[in-house]
Length: 203
Image (cartoon, rainbow, N blue to C red; front, top):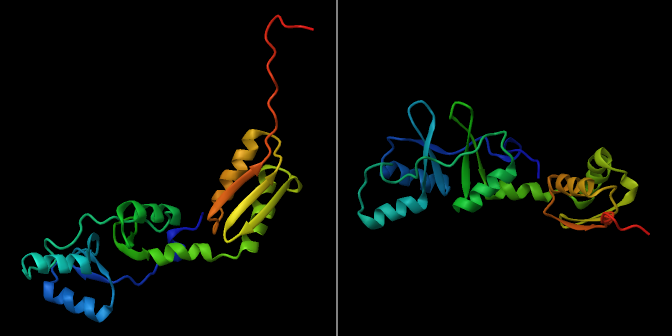
């Protein structure tokens, strides 16, 4: 999957300043109907994230209305616009996050990407995926007529006989990174390796 974060992120992320009070945050959550806000410092740089779950936990524990202090998760887990969507998806999965702030080179907020955005890259039609594999991926490495490519629900089944094991494995790797590909089934028939002849064994 070679889509970039910039291709799917929202460029209008919801944010709050670091000195926002508990009450202000509660009002913003209710009005904005969002599950989390990115917290910015006075220079507009991302320093954390505060979620509705953080707010509820704070209220349940002590009811203190002390602003974002003790509320937000910091430092924030972020991605860059040029990171791949696959990288963002991995971070969300590993950290159990619903969304990630997108920051520029200076650490300032550039956008936000959520789980729905990540899944959007898999909406690509099967036939469009198949055409790209046949016309743009395989020809760079091998002879397309030696392969059969079937795509159903984003799952690619690759059949055929590559010239070498190395070429076959490279084709598989490239196909896995085509946007919209969910998985690849390897049905290639790899060339048999020559059987080595032991020294001294002659007919």
